[in-house]
Amino acid sequence: MEKMIVKGQQKLSGEVTIGGAKNSTVALIPAAILADTPVKFDSVPDILDVHNLMLILKAMNVDSTYRRGELLVDPTKIKSVPLPGGAIRSLRASYYFMGALLGKFGEAIVGFPGGDNIGPRPIDQHIKGFKALGAHVEEKENTVHITTGPEGLHGARIFFDLVSVGATINVLLAAVKAKGLTIMENVAREPEIVDLATFLNNMGAHIRGAGTNEIRVQGVDSLRSKNVHTIIPDRIEAGTYLSFAAANGNGVLVKNVITEHLDPFLSKLEEMGVRMEIDEDEIYVPGGDVLSPVNIKTAPFPGFATDLQQPITPLLMKARGSSTIIDTLYPERTKHIPEMQRMGAKISSKDGIITVGHSIDLSGTVVEAGEIRAGVSLVGLALMAKGTTVINKADNILRGYDRIVEKFRGLSVDLEVINESESLNH
Ligand SMILES: CC(=O)N[C@H]1[C@@H](OP(=O)(O)OP(=O)(O)OC[C@H]2O[C@@H](n3ccc(=O)[nH]c3=O)[C@H](O)[C@@H]2O)O[C@H](CO)[C@@H](O)[C@@H]1O
Ligand SMILES: C=C(OP(=O)(O)O)C(=O)O
Image 1 (tube, helix red, strand yellow):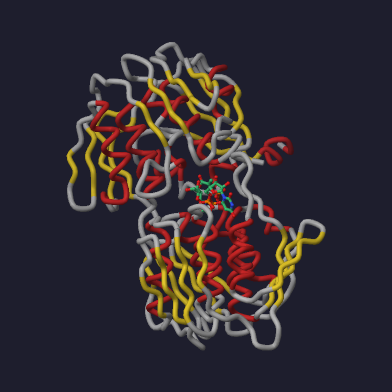
Image 2 (cartoon, helix red, strand yellow):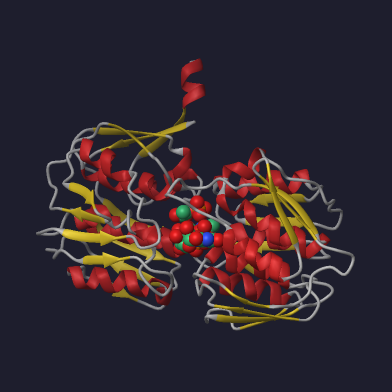
């Protein structure tokens, strides 16, 4: 277990370069096992999820090496083995091995995934998709057993009951090598899905329509990597630094951003009165603006991302008045609220509406990172508070924030991560 120590009243200034998107990376790594050649990625974030996925690869006899943002995955000696638990439970996206193993071997035994505790996260739509492709799916002792007959998977028309990032990706991973045409309707349109389709198409897959609400996949027999795949920038990491820069910054340049991926977020910042200089792939925030409250409702892409509803909270606390947030995807994504209240923040939740008031009297205390975005929003608040904040369970933040200590240092902010077991031994 890690804990993070954040000294209060530190303003951000300087530059930060955004890393590769966590939610692309965690789909691309399982997708790599579909290849019949080694695969190379760059702009890979240094996050716990990547290291845990590498452990899962190892269990399948897939070698992988990570160095300075480059990840090499060699699936040429892969073995079809059950993945009942262990690292599988450390992250959400381990469920992508269901689709990838099914596509590769026509069978998969994978434990139920972990990931952020943000309310119920069923996988019925993933299973509906696998079944439509001809798989037999059984759930036994917290493990999903997926098999096919000798004829393997076949193309199908699948209409998803709701828009799900995970189900879209998982079914795509299985369909890419199924026999014939698969038509997936009512799919998610997130940029990370487009990134995955680009990677697979560059290896010889036939995927059309990624980024729209209908994806068509013509199955192929083999996928071979011919070039390095550069992962798209993390729009959620970018949004987090932009929010903190606007709330508590003294001139911050956020580099390596695809601004179109942040449109709904940037338009909320503009509505609040945040000044920004938006260039092709970077955004400068001077800071120090007088801000107005706003109302936010999360929605699947291109709506306002649920993963940014907590990171924008420190900024909402600077507005002159009360803002509201409705998280339509995860109404129970409120783990930050009691922690922030203990720091003196005016934030509450009732009947699915989070109300964030003007909060200026904040003090550091001991808090807990209940999940990744709850945790990082506490970092934002801690930097504005008086005194020091200790954030327990900081592993949840390190799951998905690339080299966070180094990046904050580049923004003139000092924070420390301490391994609790090590500190107990000293
Ligand atoms: C690794 C990854 O990319 N994680 C992201 C992904 O999670 P994840 O892929 O788990 O999220 P989904 O898009 O699947 O979930 C959207 C909504 O659909 C519901 N649902 C989903 C699948 C299903 O079979 N049945 C069902 O009811 C979920 O409970 C949720 O309310 O998208 C979320 C929504 O943008 C983000 O918060 C996560 O950061
Ligand atoms: C919910 C998130 O991640 P995961 O789906 O990996 O738990 C997130 O990144 O905010």
